[in-house]
Amino acid sequence: MADPTSPADSLGDAILAGERAALARAITLAESRRADHRAQAQKLIQRLLPHTGKAIRVGITGVPGVGKSTTIDALGTYLTGKGHKVAVLAVDPSSTRTGGSILGDKTRMARLAVDPNAYIRPSPSSGTLGGVAAKTRETMLLCEAAGFDVILVETVGVGQSETAVADLTDFFLVLMLPNAGDELQGIKKGIIELADMIAVNKADGAGATPARVAAAQYKAALHILAPTSSLWSTPAVTISGLTGEGLDALWAKVEEHRDRFEAKGLIAEKRRRQDVKWMWTMVQDRLQAKLRHDPALKARTPELEASVASGELAPTLAAEEIAKALGL
Image (tube, rainbow, N blue to C red):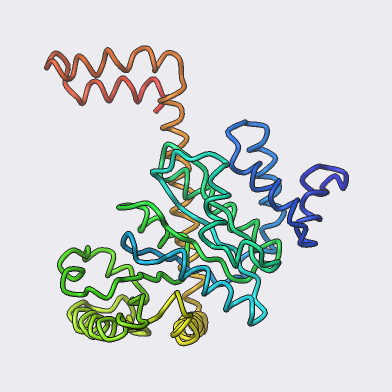
C-alpha cells in the first residue's frame, strides 16, 4: 500500500482536486532532468494513470502564417463556452526557449490565457524529438488527471514533429491557407496522409471565396489518396480563427470521428499502439543519453568517428565497439 504521506500521493490528491499550482509543479517535475525529480514524476503518473484517458486528444499543425494560435485561441474559447476544460500543449523540437516562452504562448492566445477553464503549457527545450514528445505525453496525462477533457496539442516545429503529434493524439487537424494553388504544390503527401481533417483558415472577408476554392481543391486531392480507415473520409472545411466562423462545424466533425472510432474500440486500440511506441522511444532516448553522458564513451567516440572518417576503421567495427561499451 502506498504511503499516504508520500509526496506523490499528496501532489496526486491536489491534482485530482483540480489545483492548478499542483498541476504546474507536477509538470515541472516531469520536465526536469534531475533523476530524483524524474523518479517522483514517474511514481505520480503511475498513480494517476487510472484517472487519465478520458479526454479528446487533438493534434493541430499548419504551415507558417496559417493562424494556428488565433485558431486555437478561438476554438479553445468556443469549447470552454460549451463547458469543456481545455489544455493547450505545444511540441517544438527546434525550441531553444526557456521558461520565458510561457509569456509568449499566453500572449498569442490572449483569451485562453485568462480563461479559468483553460491551461496553456509550451514544450520544454530538449535535444531530441522523442524527449519533447515524451514530456508532452506526460503533461497530457497530468492534465487529464486534473480534469481537462479536451487536449489540444500544437506542433510549432517542422518535419518529424507532425508525426510525433499524430502519435500523441486521437485526431489530427491540418490547417491550410486559402492560396490553394501554391499550397497544393508545396504540401507534403505524408502530412495529408496523417490528416483526419483539413481546415482552410482565414475564410473571412476577401478570403472567403479563395478559401472555398481551396477547400474544393483539397477535397479533390484527398479523393486520390486511399482512406486510412473505411470508417472515415478526411473532410476539407473552411474556418475563420479570427471570427470563429466554422469552428462549431469543425468540432462536430471531431466528435463524429471520436464517436465512430470509439464505438468500434479503435480509439483505445490506437492509444495502446501509441503507448508501446512511446516505450521504445524512451528506450532509444536512454541509450542516446548514455552515449552523450558516459565519460568513457564521450572520450572514445571522437576517436572512433575520426577513424571511420579517415577510412582506417570500418563503420561496422566502430559501431560494434560502441555497442559493447553500452553493454549491448
